[in-house]
Image (cartoon, rainbow, N blue to C red):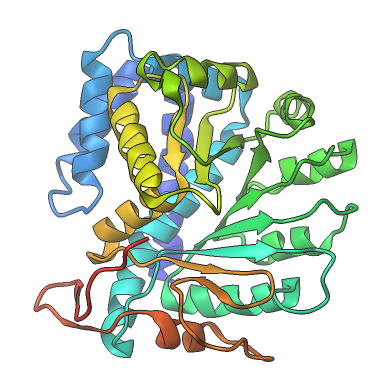
Length: 355
């Protein structure tokens, strides 16, 4: 039997058991997780995860207890387990190791996640078939996480759900436009337990869609688009609006016109708020946190986003779209070169990417 299959089965069994235990006694399980992490002194995520757990155990008023209680009471445990394994093991552990090994072989940095902008009404550029090919290539390189930013509303179609089901070991963060989701659509999202639907928090249908997913015990997030830093940030009143969605995740996404300094300010605010556990949900600044995780995995802030017409949004390079694109071509054409560091991660030969 494949050793990876044995490991995954063991993790699956432990995760299922611990999630059930945490629903009854979260503090006890958190203490066990903190003790368990001590055995992995070389684990790259040990320091940030241990810091969060330690602060949570010390802070009786932490809003994360509210997050944990609501999540375990109102969300499918199998969805939590499957998504957690896909991210924590397939992407950040097994996949991360493959990424580092592949980087050394190819000579260029490899991101841990790919961002696709998808226009379902378009029959050219970044179609589902092209995305499918990219994902197949990505899995070979160790990439098991993907963002799909759907640009326009579109009638129900099974093609994207076929994509999700074809890659059960991968995680998909599916950013949906402002579109009312029919019950059949909501049911399909619920059954796709490797998908985290991200609803448009600025849209008129967000509350209704969130209620429909919540009624089905689905995991979902809310996105917030910003082009300036809220003046009310000193008392955090601007984020209380999102309490009503009862979502475990709020994703901050900068508008295309957002100044880089504003993005840095928001990234710092999100990171500080997450450490201090101010809200009953996790805050995620889309680009800065992707880069932060990349630094942990590879030592570099590798990031790649592809436009719906097939051109690279980031990194910005003058490379034409290929009619039969392959991921390694995009990476070779845009990613900085690396050399072996003598350790288990690459070292960048160029200046670090500035997003």
